[in-house]
Length: 424
Image 1: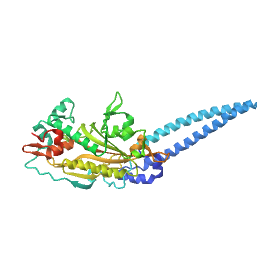
Image 2 (image 1 turned 30 degrees about the horizontal axis):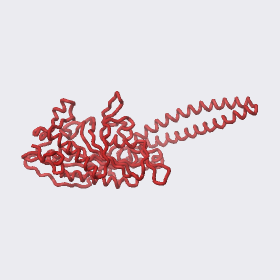
Image 3 (image 1 turned 90 degrees about the vertical axis):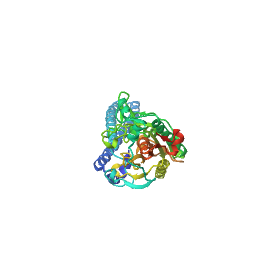
Image 4 (image 1 turned 180 degrees about the horizontal axis):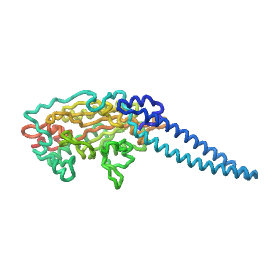
């Protein structure tokens, strides 16, 4: 979240910048500034009362020694009154701080100056396109029909076992899924990312740290009895590795990767756009997470975008890169690039990755700091992450774009992982 100091020092700039996210911030920013001033005044009065009580307490002993018993009793009554005042002020201060923190969590991250204005994904800014256009003979089949034809993904069985959005991968479909996971992890390792295997459930502090909680859109699966949450992405547990930590500046950039299943309720999703693998409640993803010095986080973001682009290129898919507009930017992101691959059978673009810089927004919530070399005072770090890659739509595009009359070709880079070159 934004710090109170940042808001106080950049009040009007924050209000204007958040208009790009279509967030009218004037009222809440004014309230934050006002409550923070009240908090500081309360703290000042509390400190003054404590100081006065300490001074009087020291005088009481001297008054008794000097035989001024009546004056000493008056002083004792005064300290008693001050104790009541201090207790009331401390209670008031706690209430004010809770309210202030709640307001701060309701303010989105300030977008980077390069974020274009816009209301929805229709206003996202085209950056570039790559890969060769797909040329298929006849009428290509969508991946859900290919999955049934070659018996590699069973959507009906998943619906029977759990419900819609929980497919069962079978035979060569399961091996293709495993091949993609291993390929993405191996590529990440070559690029200098350290692999971790995190828990699939997190506590409230972790969900809050990366901005998934409070869950404004109702996307998190909540294990109520234990008050734990199934992760919507590996971003949550991996970034929280550094919660309440002071990292070494010499270690920047800190680069982690993780494969996990991901769980999202996707409330309100329905219709043809969610058919097959297009939108699932459980899906596999390889994530990359970075912690970097604030002065270099945008150079690192560019490198992460280039890395994700290289993965799609190696898979031989047609793709495009988009800079998200303010209306499509997430609550916590300062700048996000989306990758989409083209689905020949569905004749549309499918989102397969988002690469984002959160600047200090997550780190401030998590108290993730670093100590600059030679300095005693700590600073807030910057966090970044990206999908590298999310599997469902990548697999959908591979099945559709590599189909032939004889079967589905396996991209060359995956053949050592699958052990076969054709699904038929």
